[in-house]
Image (cartoon, rainbow, N blue to C red):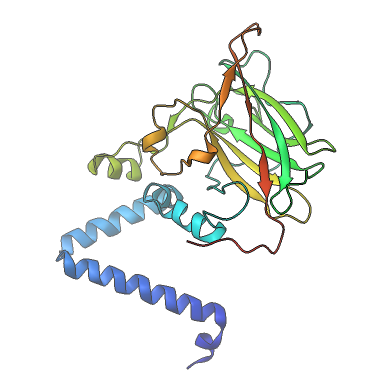
Length: 270
């Protein structure tokens, strides 16, 4: 065995690459792939790379969610992990709780989300935990996609208080399409699939001596909950929302508690 194969990282690369190549060869044999079909596939993948859609391709093929489950454990302790997605922006403003993620004139129904950040080990609160939150507008656009929105609109790092409690005021996000106009969108159309994602809020939660948690909170009643284009919906991550009849505009309240795994806790793999 040469020096490259002795390196553990290279040994892993050799193992996985060999498995992928073997699987591809088997698909070609089973379906008697033609030279024209191979060239079309390679042309498609070249365009995917040119359009920077490889992450999107991984998402819609279900690979991103599968690897997320394998990495973090789908059935382990604590709040369910979920994929980060491509819309995260570092450096969002740090906001004390209670926080506002948008201006008072932001279109849409108001959502007041509150809860407690705890340790999954003993359910004790985690003081001063930070929740990095990002979401779309009511029209289903992130602020970096929409010049009409202020910089870092509907984004913020919300710091929980000394008891691990947080509260944020935002609006109910809208669902959106993820693959319009590109090669992945054309592939979904050819496969008879849609490219809609149900409305959701992204959250990354951090606290000392605990593994970071990245997840999504989904809006109940969304028409795409049962057919998410990337198959990321998990029942425990669907919010329960109650109307606030005394509010001046349509407002909903919801509570969601986060539980983080202590560092060193191995995820429970399927």
